[in-house]
Length: 133
Image (cartoon, rainbow, N blue to C red; front, side, top):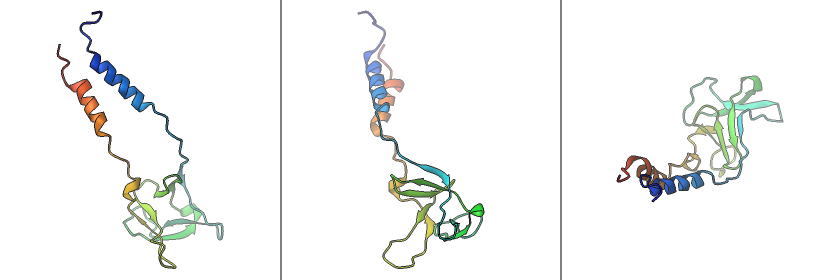
């Protein structure tokens, strides 16, 4: 054997990890810290009480854009998040006319997924378990 002290398993797991982390993914268009402006009267969308403390169900209104809140918009995911918070724009169910627009918690589909279990096992086998030397 050329390399009797090197275990081959960590090398293969490192190769697998490298290939997993370098897979190509599509670029998504995202707009961070932007204002939502109405073309009708040049006002911008913001939570009603003009403070930095928002709760679930805080209604939205339009104000002069210099006083408006900033939003993070991700068109591909369909999310409109109040910048710097975890509150999303909630336009209601769409079943009734003149429904109130408010902020609410983001849908669970917009939350980041937990890390895959296979990566945790790979980490355990590669770095924490003894190599049997």
